[in-house]
Length: 173
Image (cartoon, rainbow, N blue to C red; front, side, top):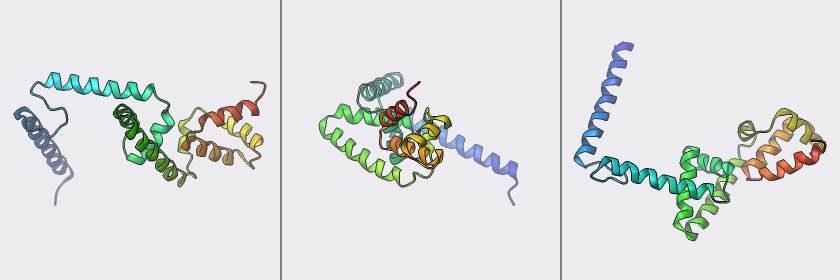
Protein backbone atom coordinates (compact mmCIF):
# COMPACT_ATOMS: atom_id res chain seq x y z
CA UNK A 1 0.00 0.00 0.00
CA UNK A 2 1.32 3.45 -0.92
CA UNK A 3 0.72 6.11 1.70
CA UNK A 4 -0.29 9.66 0.67
CA UNK A 5 3.04 11.18 1.81
CA UNK A 6 4.97 8.52 -0.10
CA UNK A 7 2.85 9.15 -3.20
CA UNK A 8 3.55 12.88 -2.94
CA UNK A 9 7.26 12.13 -2.69
CA UNK A 10 7.12 9.92 -5.81
CA UNK A 11 5.34 12.69 -7.73
CA UNK A 12 7.90 15.32 -6.64
CA UNK A 13 10.79 13.03 -7.59
CA UNK A 14 9.23 12.27 -10.99
CA UNK A 15 8.64 15.95 -11.76
CA UNK A 16 12.17 16.83 -10.65
CA UNK A 17 13.61 14.12 -12.89
CA UNK A 18 11.66 15.44 -15.86
CA UNK A 19 12.81 19.00 -15.24
CA UNK A 20 16.45 18.01 -14.80
CA UNK A 21 16.31 15.88 -17.94
CA UNK A 22 14.71 18.67 -19.98
CA UNK A 23 17.22 21.27 -18.81
CA UNK A 24 20.11 18.88 -19.51
CA UNK A 25 18.81 18.25 -23.03
CA UNK A 26 18.42 21.98 -23.61
CA UNK A 27 21.97 22.63 -22.38
CA UNK A 28 23.31 19.96 -24.72
CA UNK A 29 21.39 21.43 -27.65
CA UNK A 30 19.10 18.40 -27.95
CA UNK A 31 15.91 20.28 -27.14
CA UNK A 32 13.01 19.89 -29.56
CA UNK A 33 11.81 23.40 -28.66
CA UNK A 34 11.20 25.86 -31.53
CA UNK A 35 13.67 28.68 -32.11
CA UNK A 36 16.47 26.65 -30.48
CA UNK A 37 19.74 28.51 -30.82
CA UNK A 38 23.10 28.27 -29.14
CA UNK A 39 22.51 31.31 -26.97
CA UNK A 40 19.55 31.03 -24.57
CA UNK A 41 19.13 34.80 -24.28
CA UNK A 42 19.07 35.22 -28.06
CA UNK A 43 16.53 32.39 -28.24
CA UNK A 44 14.25 34.13 -25.72
CA UNK A 45 14.56 37.47 -27.51
CA UNK A 46 13.70 35.86 -30.85
CA UNK A 47 10.62 34.22 -29.34
CA UNK A 48 9.51 37.46 -27.67
CA UNK A 49 10.01 39.44 -30.88
CA UNK A 50 8.03 36.91 -32.91
CA UNK A 51 5.24 36.79 -30.35
CA UNK A 52 5.10 40.60 -30.26
CA UNK A 53 4.73 40.68 -34.07
CA UNK A 54 1.95 38.07 -33.89
CA UNK A 55 0.08 39.99 -31.18
CA UNK A 56 0.53 43.29 -33.05
CA UNK A 57 -0.91 41.66 -36.18
CA UNK A 58 -3.90 40.39 -34.18
CA UNK A 59 -4.62 43.72 -32.48
CA UNK A 60 -4.27 45.62 -35.78
CA UNK A 61 -6.69 43.29 -37.56
CA UNK A 62 -10.45 43.06 -37.84
CA UNK A 63 -10.47 40.15 -35.38
CA UNK A 64 -11.48 40.74 -31.77
CA UNK A 65 -11.65 39.08 -28.36
CA UNK A 66 -14.77 37.08 -29.27
CA UNK A 67 -13.12 35.66 -32.40
CA UNK A 68 -10.08 34.66 -30.33
CA UNK A 69 -12.30 33.14 -27.64
CA UNK A 70 -14.29 30.97 -30.04
CA UNK A 71 -11.13 29.86 -31.85
CA UNK A 72 -9.36 29.15 -28.55
CA UNK A 73 -12.14 26.73 -27.62
CA UNK A 74 -12.07 25.19 -31.09
CA UNK A 75 -8.28 24.81 -31.08
CA UNK A 76 -8.28 23.80 -27.40
CA UNK A 77 -5.77 26.45 -26.35
CA UNK A 78 -5.71 29.64 -24.30
CA UNK A 79 -7.16 32.87 -25.63
CA UNK A 80 -3.66 34.40 -25.62
CA UNK A 81 -2.31 31.52 -27.70
CA UNK A 82 -5.26 31.84 -30.08
CA UNK A 83 -4.56 35.57 -30.52
CA UNK A 84 -0.94 34.77 -31.36
CA UNK A 85 -2.02 32.04 -33.78
CA UNK A 86 -4.47 34.40 -35.49
CA UNK A 87 -1.68 36.98 -35.78
CA UNK A 88 0.68 34.37 -37.20
CA UNK A 89 -1.85 33.44 -39.89
CA UNK A 90 -2.30 37.11 -40.75
CA UNK A 91 1.46 37.55 -41.07
CA UNK A 92 1.71 34.48 -43.31
CA UNK A 93 -0.56 36.07 -45.92
CA UNK A 94 -3.79 35.75 -47.84
CA UNK A 95 -3.90 31.96 -48.09
CA UNK A 96 -3.58 31.56 -44.34
CA UNK A 97 -6.15 34.31 -43.73
CA UNK A 98 -8.59 32.38 -45.94
CA UNK A 99 -7.88 29.25 -43.90
CA UNK A 100 -8.35 31.29 -40.71
CA UNK A 101 -11.75 32.46 -41.94
CA UNK A 102 -12.81 28.85 -42.50
CA UNK A 103 -11.55 27.90 -39.04
CA UNK A 104 -13.67 30.73 -37.66
CA UNK A 105 -16.79 29.44 -39.44
CA UNK A 106 -16.16 25.91 -38.16
CA UNK A 107 -15.47 27.19 -34.64
CA UNK A 108 -18.69 29.21 -34.60
CA UNK A 109 -20.73 26.26 -35.82
CA UNK A 110 -19.23 24.13 -33.05
CA UNK A 111 -19.79 26.88 -30.46
CA UNK A 112 -23.46 27.22 -31.36
CA UNK A 113 -24.03 23.59 -30.45
CA UNK A 114 -23.59 24.36 -26.74
CA UNK A 115 -25.42 27.67 -26.57
CA UNK A 116 -27.58 26.66 -23.57
CA UNK A 117 -24.66 27.51 -21.29
CA UNK A 118 -24.19 31.29 -21.54
CA UNK A 119 -20.43 31.30 -20.89
CA UNK A 120 -19.75 34.11 -23.34
CA UNK A 121 -22.54 36.19 -21.81
CA UNK A 122 -20.95 35.74 -18.36
CA UNK A 123 -17.59 36.77 -19.80
CA UNK A 124 -19.07 39.87 -21.44
CA UNK A 125 -19.86 43.34 -20.16
CA UNK A 126 -23.62 42.70 -20.26
CA UNK A 127 -25.58 42.59 -17.01
CA UNK A 128 -28.96 41.24 -15.95
CA UNK A 129 -30.61 44.65 -16.50
CA UNK A 130 -29.33 44.57 -20.09
CA UNK A 131 -30.90 41.13 -20.56
CA UNK A 132 -34.18 42.45 -19.13
CA UNK A 133 -34.20 45.43 -21.52
CA UNK A 134 -33.25 43.28 -24.51
CA UNK A 135 -35.89 40.66 -23.65
CA UNK A 136 -38.56 43.35 -23.94
CA UNK A 137 -36.97 44.83 -27.07
CA UNK A 138 -36.59 41.49 -28.85
CA UNK A 139 -39.94 40.14 -27.64
CA UNK A 140 -38.35 37.32 -25.67
CA UNK A 141 -40.43 35.73 -22.88
CA UNK A 142 -37.73 36.27 -20.22
CA UNK A 143 -34.25 37.68 -19.61
CA UNK A 144 -32.91 34.10 -19.83
CA UNK A 145 -33.88 33.88 -23.50
CA UNK A 146 -32.31 37.30 -24.08
CA UNK A 147 -29.10 36.03 -22.44
CA UNK A 148 -29.12 33.09 -24.85
CA UNK A 149 -29.64 35.42 -27.81
CA UNK A 150 -26.75 37.60 -26.57
CA UNK A 151 -24.71 34.39 -26.25
CA UNK A 152 -25.45 33.38 -29.84
CA UNK A 153 -24.52 36.82 -31.14
CA UNK A 154 -21.24 36.83 -29.22
CA UNK A 155 -20.35 33.37 -30.52
CA UNK A 156 -21.11 34.53 -34.05
CA UNK A 157 -18.94 37.61 -33.59
CA UNK A 158 -21.92 39.98 -33.65
CA UNK A 159 -21.20 42.00 -30.52
CA UNK A 160 -22.05 45.22 -32.39
CA UNK A 161 -25.58 43.95 -33.08
CA UNK A 162 -26.15 43.45 -29.35
CA UNK A 163 -24.73 46.90 -28.53
CA UNK A 164 -26.97 48.55 -31.12
CA UNK A 165 -30.06 46.68 -29.88
CA UNK A 166 -29.25 47.74 -26.33
CA UNK A 167 -28.99 51.39 -27.40
CA UNK A 168 -32.39 51.10 -29.07
CA UNK A 169 -33.87 49.25 -26.09
CA UNK A 170 -32.67 52.03 -23.74
CA UNK A 171 -33.03 55.27 -25.71
CA UNK A 172 -32.57 57.46 -22.60
CA UNK A 173 -29.07 56.16 -21.84
